[in-house]
View 1: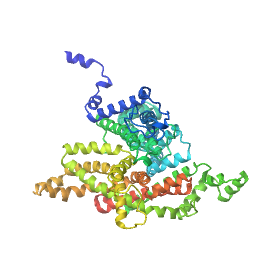
View 2: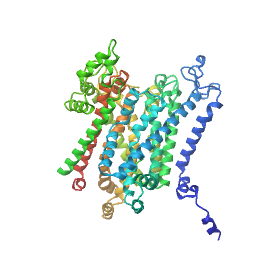
View 3: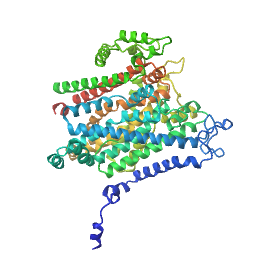
View 4: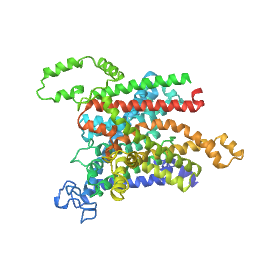
Length: 292
Length: 316
């Protein structure tokens, strides 16, 4: 009898098979743990450190890690690298996350419309996707970042503008395969509007691949922000980001290697985490995709 | 074959048109549009700007301007550099070789190592090697190329002194050996991401082939496992990789830009950044268009090669 009672309890998302599978994916859990600790450190860490990220101490320039209270050393202006790393993390993670939201939104919108409408609208949209994919993303982003004012919000828009295509492709394929299913035809017969069918009936059934793609997009957006900030066209100082902390690091590589090694390690950890989580979600949500 | 070629060619043409429209929109986003350099000149009045606009035909409808611009691109007139007035095609041509060499070398490295890892992962599925290769690939994809380059320079040039930290030649020494010495580190750095991608795809492709009937037949014939692998599996698994090589072009170009910056390698990527720094928009636009055209053509060539090698595709 107890078994029956247990089944009578309405199932919650944390009881679902997908959640169970995710919780058994060791790499995904490791990624989740890493990114959670990193995020918490970036949010609360700056209040716990003895130095402000903007405090300049010219007498303490180029202090190597573990000098006094400078746990990760200081930069060419004597600013505390640990404090800057955490403040930069806030910006880099936030930019990555926002760029993911925006690009997933654009990609989903384009994908749903192209997949559901099909015909020449679908073809035109998907050929535009191909067109954007033909540009190496960094060329496109740099050209845009150089001509538009590189505020953090604009960086988000620029990254999203060059990262939405993959989501669009995934959603389009998914929607196209769902379009002729019975529940969609039933919806049409009931006289539901096209928008209702697209977004309320079909889209919820395509959420799995979208969630996986969105997670991997965070990873790519963080990397892209790091690339352009490293090259000097992304987040502008004094606002720190992991990428722009590396911007001047090469000239001090021989004398102060920690300036290059530490922010790059932070980027790698953050991006690896999202890639691990994405991998776990792909297995858990049973998304068929051969890509890495 | 002919039908396949025609349809594939027309697809690429359509794609090139779309690519050029995107490029044209970006060109018109630049501050002051195509007139940027005149707008900055001292003593320029609105009347002068209007006159130049009239002369350059910038007051015509956008779609006519686009057709005009695209027609000039087709004729090989890609504009002139703001910096020294050389034609954009000449400037790109000067930097093309260095980039292609770097990309070619690192692709060769990626193919060699990635293929080996992929096949071994597939034949020793779920082994420790396979597990580590999977994790390693995901980590490799997460490492920023420029950071990997900096760490490489720190360890192998500054600490160990094995390889130079940048440039294509030591000044005053133009020998091939000297050039190869400079090529080692940047091409390894650039290949990292592609080793990861290549090994994952190769693993999947090998697994697909291994489970097929002709492999079972080959084993049943009594061929040694080694011969089955070499004669029947590897060749078939490598086929889809040709398409992959084409698809990887944009990301190789992206990596090349970053790698060239870190290693002061005189290629297209460095040229692009230098031109951005000088607001040399004709060269920036030229490189942007050129990289996209390279990608479209690269994919076209990859598809044609696959069709030539594999009759199943052109007959389908």
